[in-house]
Length: 395
Ligand code: C2E
Ligand code: MG
Ligand code: MG
Image 1 (tube, rainbow, N blue to C red):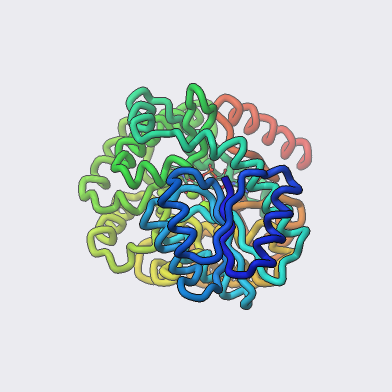
Image 2: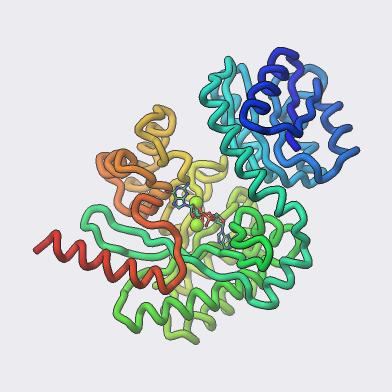
């Protein structure tokens, strides 16, 4: 079910009509945050998508976002605002930090085409995916980890200056008997919340190292990028455990890049800082994932032993058509060059994205244009044929 929250009746009516137009019939609306919360409390778990206006009297949209997060709302959100774009960007950041799952931001006056695209995408997703995930329980996730139904897929990273594959990123996938392949955005936050993230990460690390060893044995000298939730940095045993793990597979820590996700809080966190420094001392490379999205990103860089930044795909995908994204992309790239850090641009989806990154002196690229994440067998096939193409081009 969809929920529209806006104090303006005409906007509620417009949204209702548009949603019905694209085939969504289960819709409720509320004229204030208070009403919305009441509805939510009466029908918990029923709203797959909530569309929130930010400027409302009484309770504004930002406060509503906080209250939704306090209620562990796990559906999708679309935020709208008639104020300038910085307000929307701010709200997106707030939502991300809670964390809430925002799938779109709509400036007012509403561009009907733009809105229709976002609604269609969300409606399809919620029909096909979110509804089925609603019944997913924490116990399912425990089971999946115990039965090793979480598997790594791999996405290549390519140096666009010489067209060489330089690494692969391991991305978790949950193979669910009834629901099919569940993406990490759904289960990683759950794993973090429910204390399963440590065991899940250990399983992923073991599987990824095993596959990486196999790639080495057939002659691929790459780097393995591995996502590590910042929430694990409290564990003092992490550096020693990870060194032991990599050695077990004859892999050097220097071959592994640990991408720290959700790194917002770590600047002020003395324990996390210590773990990061010890991981680096042991030889692991460290990357700030989704760079540019957190207020703390800049501080992280200056005070911590990171070796790489990964610019969030929000600043890369379609950047050539979006002046704000393009400016941010340019300054992130300049910053990384000035600080002599390796930089990866993720989310390259089109030739335009790729040529913009080249033009701005970007070096490493990752994105659907190059390759989608795939299981090891397919990755090997892809790597073999990529080598062939490059050899042919250069001969
Ligand atoms: P991430 O680490 O930033 O990974 C990149 C995500 O962007 C991946 O999504 C990848 O499939 C997607 N992507 C790559 N190229 C493109 C593109 O051109 N366009 C678009 N639209 N997307 C692209 P995925 O696999 O769904 O992973 C989502 C996030 O889940 C990851 O973001 C990471 O934060 C988290 N994650 C995945 N695996 C793990 C894990 O093992 N542990 C932890 N802690 N987090 C993980
Ligand atoms: Mg990553
Ligand atoms: Mg990222």
